[in-house]
Length: 542
Image (tube, rainbow, N blue to C red; front, side):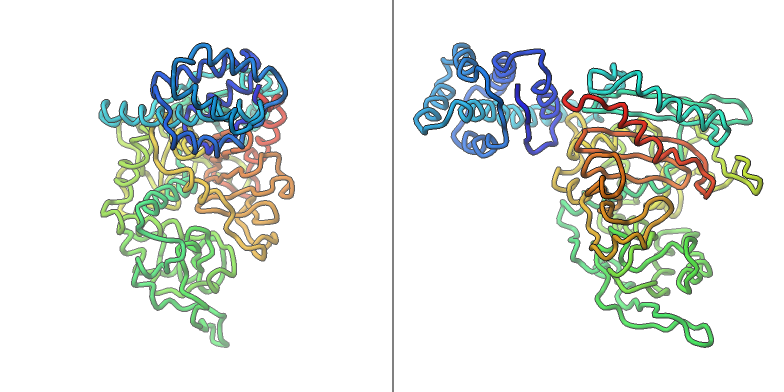
């Protein structure tokens, strides 16, 4: 069987064929016959241009020793009447290719056509259906079919049940998937402790900062339309920021000493928390105090928010620090300005609706309030108590929709979003952004001098092996960061304890939903869940 199938990923067929190739349930001949048959049904002839592109991709394949020649004979016996397929094989022989290379050449061509035709077929089907939402099979499969151990996954269940039984969390929902298939999907405890309402899979949660990656995708949609570049100054889109100064310190009277920025803060810096902005409630600098005095994050509209920011200097020279900030809320304003739509409307039209995220948005309508989880915090005694009003009541569309932390969602909805990113920007035939845009988002953009452990927020410390991409953290070297995930894992969390990660190396997606405001005494389930998941992944070949 094929040891490795490495094509530019993004289509559902790729992952399914990869799974088939990695199994030992069929011979190479049978596998090749099936995919070739499907390809020939969709595209009877393979033209020269596609051959050339397939040849380029063929070098990415690696076949072990085996009856490759026999496979070619068997497959050609079925499709030898195809002039183009026959000439394809003859030309490969005349060119002096080895048996191994010829097999790679044939199968790569088959796969290339399959991907191209399959993509076109899906688009046509979507158009015929009126552009409906992506369908997702939420059926929980047997863990062993995708390399997990059912027995060892009980450790994840025990971990989550333990923190619920200890009353550290009133309730939780966890969802684990591999190769796009749901492996584990559990509820724990209660949605509301006072009434005893049980946690359910359709419970609606405050996403808080898990809104940031969604805003990042919205920004990438506009990036793909040529509406901004990472090198653009932010002031190109927000002229009010053209004359921002930088706070250098304070004088003897406590007044801020201002200086010119070393360069105008850029869009890349805005996407990576390095532009000079802050939040106002995580620090105690003169700039933080000015955010608090002006009530920046309490603005009634995004326009008011921008007007207040324009009066406050940057907290540091652009590009010289990583400081968790209101940058994604600024992005929300830019999205509105570039698209001509309100942020919630843009996300609904271009992300939530196409992905079938039916319960995601910026408020919870009356008919869904019964599914809205109660939010909790710890009091002075360490007891977990309700935190009414934390983050707002979410009863109506907000005047200032927060791209940094204002959305609500469910475990399934956010899984759809995360699975889209895991699959290169596409979910079961519905493409949101390109694989290149996902790669740009999920690549570390921080310089080495920002990865020293000096900068971070909560448990997310920027350090060797763990940096920051566009609106999400990135594990570019998990081992160096002392994490068990695969290389390239990207993730983030929310103020009420929600968390997720996407591991492209192991093709794993995990969603964790809870509603307890993070604090020093919060349970560490976000990072405890990772070894609990990966110790159960025992067969990487499946």
